[in-house]
Length: 516
Image 1 (cartoon, helix red, strand yellow):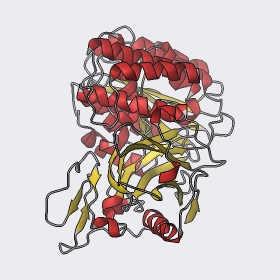
Image 2 (spheres, helix red, strand yellow):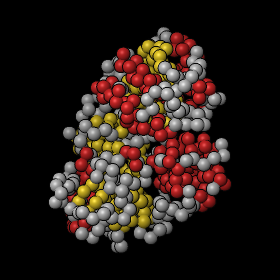
Image 3 (tube, helix red, strand yellow):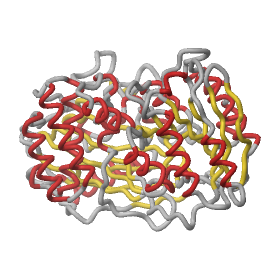
Image 4 (cartoon, one colour):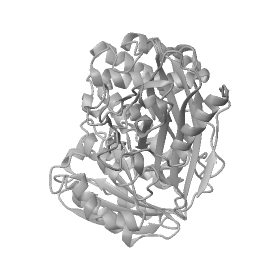
């Protein structure tokens, strides 16, 4: 097993005592010494939903499935499982893309469809990248204007994406041709997107095509693109809408087709394009994926879900991707389609890490309470961080993954704050690897709104999701300035970064402010 440790340059270890405490925290996070409960007589328990319990008493204030935890004075004597936060990596962005679509059409997204981590992960970051497969770990943060509360950002980055050095891809396009896809901007957008993706793939790549409405059928078996690109284009051009939506049958047929055309040494992936509005057959993602579990697990076939349409079954698509070892994106128009199918092609068809999980250990002497923003559906039991049989997230080249924490520090906090670790399996050999990074209290920026621009963008995206979920500008997430001030911040950041994606964020915040 390879263990590599990277400590950010910012921050200096204080004295011998604090260095020892920092070493203990790092050992807790990266050495596997998780003090979890093994019997009813132990005082501390960390459940699979991320909640923390002390003895037989109710969970402390703020604990539960949302991942927030309070730390008692007794617990501050030594590191324990109560100071850990563990989750599977997630590079989904569909929630943010769909929220923008709803806002553009004059509505507010349903709070249940707002997933803050997908807002945060929709924006470019400036993390250092590794040379090969795996991750770098960056940890930074800043004080908010709410007393004792800071935002801490854990940033994970894979190597840069290059089209010339990836292994061949064997892609099975599974396309929804049900009646609901007849709405302008659905099937026609899907066809243009897949055609453009086909043009960008290499001669050594392979493509199959499956369609589904009330039934599913294989339109094109796995076909090498060399000499057959026209055949693939013809099959895409002939797609027409039909009847109801049997998404379960489509996914099952897609995996069967992918298995028949399986290529050793290639990235075998199902690309599901749908509005997610299943109304016929099996509509439960657990049941659907259980039926194709052998293909998914034994053959390593992953799922990339692409959502389309003004009415979108977000929850179904998101759960399919999470349980199907993949990720989702949402495409509302040609600009989004080009980004997903052309600009981000390498990261959406290649893999650099399988079953990737992160664990953050907070120093109990300096941290009184912490809360992971989002990732509710991606929680992993702390003791399962190094269990490589437990599913994590699949991540491709060029991806970054950001986790944001609200952290309340103790009065006079000084020294080690947190150690963040990521564990993943090599996509080819399944050998495990780890990487870590640390943060000291002295390295926190004094003011969030004078911190580096990309950290501010992360905060704005998280605060925006928070406002949409709570329907209130009095924050659940400490330091939320409300939509009006948030919009001003976003416009200033768009000017500073010259980033069109941040400009879109600012406009979405403005629209939400007008509607609320």
